[in-house]
Length: 295
Image (cartoon, rainbow, N blue to C red):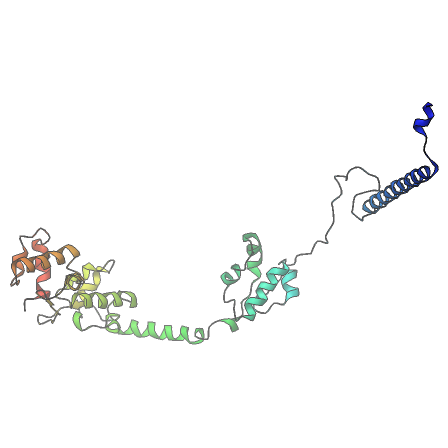
């Protein structure tokens, strides 16, 4: 057998081989053409600062440019300013939408501080806008129309009705209006004096006012406690621990000592019986005595 017989290919096989070869060649050329088109399309994208065939973007050119808004400053009322005005002030569109939603839900900007709570507003922005915020008086509570006149009337009334030096008023018959006639007493201290007297069950001495923190010392010379002052007394033999401790002169440990003493020794007929207990000093017994009933 000759050597060329090993490489002999019949005619039909040669046709198949040539067809496959041509098909592969066509596919190779098509792929190359498609790659060139994609590359050209990517290169042709309108990106600022890029040139066809360049390998890198020049550092001096940005990727894109946005038109800068010109920020203006002018007086505005956040309750009535429209979107155009708010945008001119430098607010972002989403901040403007938040303002519109707040107003649509019934929200009102009554002060500059209310506007400072706008979501996303920075300290720098607020400080720049604050001098230009103008809140119309139409958006203030209607009570402000009469509050000033009423306050002036009350001040005049209290001023003219203050008691003079040497005059006194009964401490246990006072209400807050009467107490405000005392020089140095306003509504705050008047409420505290009345509330403390109710907790005690009534005042038995003017000196008990010293137990109210920060009360002006001069107040005591304008009040008096009569000798027949009626106070509400504690049924010391019947009240529970929690009921006893509600009185300002009985703390938790003293209330527990009273309950334990009743359980161990029976009825209490005099507070002096408690003097041997460590929780009851002579001073504690003396100030509590007017408020105790042994029935």
